[in-house]
Image 1 (cartoon, rainbow, N blue to C red):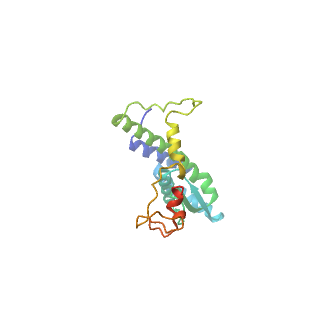
Image 2 (image 1 turned 135 degrees about the horizontal axis):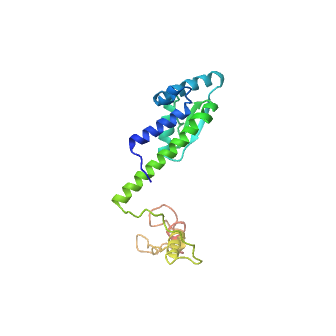
Image 3 (image 1 turned 90 degrees about the vertical axis):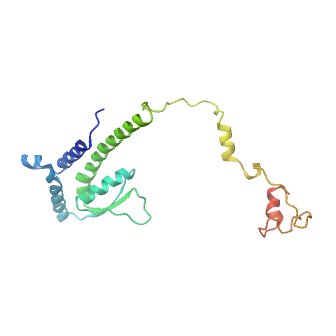
Length: 202
């Protein structure tokens, strides 16, 4: 696996943008820096005949959200989100033609390039700082019976109120035994039978 450096990564993304700019001349093909202007011009041409509509984009994580937001802003489209929507949701007003033919295909390819780069950086750091063994976790066949630790986990997770240790019944403040209809000595204001008396089984 050959890892791209930052400059090579930026150049690769610029070439990707130039591909979607659909240059018409050899000079335009070389001038990748003008790709954004050509894409913006084509967007304006599409908007003369096609009305922008509201799109809702749902991306998988913050990396993809940053990338898609940057692409929208690069082409003069303001990304936004309504209050209460998830951070991985991006709203935008754009024409369907532009989204289907330029924005979304470019985003998907750029996202794949960046993810590969980030994975390579992550693997490199982990290998140097933590462990050189980057093999995937072992996949095992599921055993027929529960593992020795499973019952304790299930018992802890599924214990009911009746199974949990309960405190002994409290005597009244004057030392007398509390009746079922007396106020609970814990101070809750409820009857003893509706409060501590219920949990102790009295």
